[in-house]
Length: 162
Length: 162
Image (tube, rainbow over all chains, first blue to last red; front, top):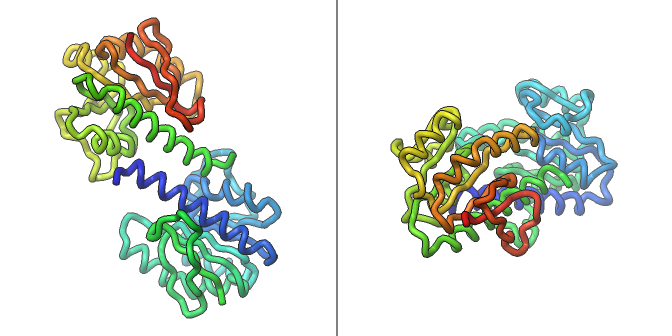
């Protein structure tokens, strides 16, 4: 598969998974956390499909399109393992949804990163909250969800906080 | 429209236009020129759908995925207005297809860039060659083509060398 086809599949998988997650949390109040702001594409989509939610973003720095810069009091900037404990002290048990997009090209390093972050991520989630992630998040408190129909497995993962 | 939706539409428009162009030049021998290698996504697609064509790429520098680095003798690296005259002296009248993806966020600057490059681009094209571009290329030797069905206008442009 060409990298163009692969890019299309990845963006479509993100779109469909985020929209599915948004539908699943309709009855669950709470904020949304985006880990890995990147160029702001999925953040822009989240604020479009979840206009009434507080959306907090996490990244090393802001490198987004000028139209997609989050409000300053919704950004956790810096190393994930510095910002995550701060987020837990501020938002424990308050998130209805997390979108994790922190994988790098190195699969093993990405898996290790997520495994290390998982315990704190879990603390942020309400019961019934949905996690959308670019890689599987393995934790006894998370139960995998079926992907929306048409979304190819292996590009995106969904789970619910039990 | 969110930047995620916009990104999906852009990649789909590129895919469908490039595939349509590839079908249109089926009976026309000649090389393919990619202006704006970028991260190599469309280059990778071109070499997948046109495996028997020589594909030459133009960019300021190589910043592609390691799997997508073109052969050294197919790259024109440097400022477009340095490489374009060299390409004309080497490949005049030999291109069956050009993909132009050199637009920046600044629409006026991008239009000016394409307008300045157009006379040399035309010299590279065979009669019947197809131009796929992220912005309209205005030249008396080019006749606009209808986009493939389902491709939203305004994201990609196609024309044939008359």
